[in-house]
Length: 122
Image 1 (cartoon, rainbow, N blue to C red):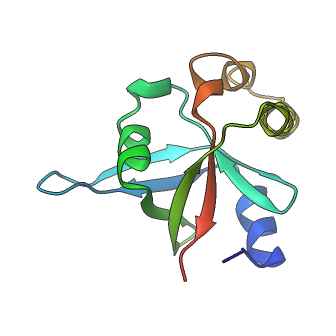
Image 2: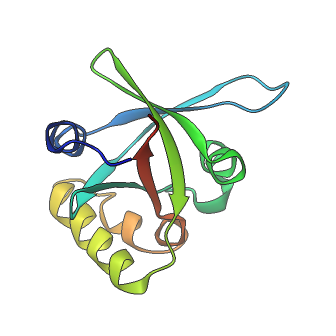
Image 3: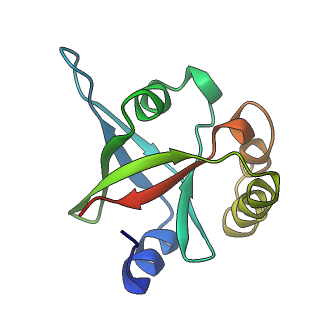
């Protein structure tokens, strides 16, 4: 299933979303993260790399929720293993967050190795 263009624009246009991920017999993890759009798809990264708790759960269980502006979207997280796409995501982070001192950190290790495509769940 693909996002509709309006939802991609809305999510990619917001500065931050909350990612919510659960695990069996564990408290839910909720964290604010940055999100970018590339080619009609949405991508997120963990600035803590593999140490990000939400990221470890997203990788392990592959599912979660994005929350923004009172709306929630059930999502699936898909790891990205394409150097060209990773480079495009780097550019999207640099462009969107260029005014933040943390923008470059999102394009280098440990964050750069954690690119996940965010897909809607029907």
